[in-house]
Amino acid sequence: MTTLTESTHAGEGIVSEANKSRSRDAITVLSGQTLVAMAVLGMVTVGAATAEAVTGNTGAGTCSAVTVGAGAKAGVYKVTFIEPGSGAGDFIVEDPDGITVGSGAVGTEFAAGGLTFTISDGDPDFAAGDAFEITVAAGSGKYKEWNPANADGSQVACAILFDAVDASDGDAPGVAVSRDAEVNAAELVWFTGATTDNKTAGLAQLATVGIIGR
Image: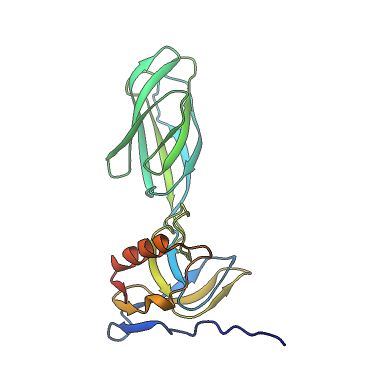
């Protein structure tokens, strides 16, 4: 005998919403996913990063292997040398808001503030004030299944999918509950393998946008 499993229905776990359509948004679900109603979502808010030496640098070294991780902000990071040396040099890194996120050294991988990269020495050496700008592109604003292991902004839970969406063959439209709502926490659909701690963290993130799990 064939066993059939009934999936969640549209809006099944919504306990209450704001008046009219204030709680809901039309969204785009990122290609490659098949999501059911009440799936917990994150938004892709950051894209790839590129590095470029600031015009006028004395040093001929390069910045390479730039990758974006959790916590990265869209915008321009600035890497500034504060203590140069022969075949070496120390630098600080500021995020797009001008906040110092860490310091590093030539030849050693830097990993902080959502960025990872390595600056290599060149001839001539770097001088104090030499700099690189690392530009983190804005994300697509599309939605995908929330997972704290993601690194494109979707590691932050920010919405609940109202009805099932099949985006397996390409981006697809959908509707999300994005704010000012109560939901039945027991009916939320989490990523495969989500632990109790993951779910607790996800519910806390949803609460920051006014989605309260009951």
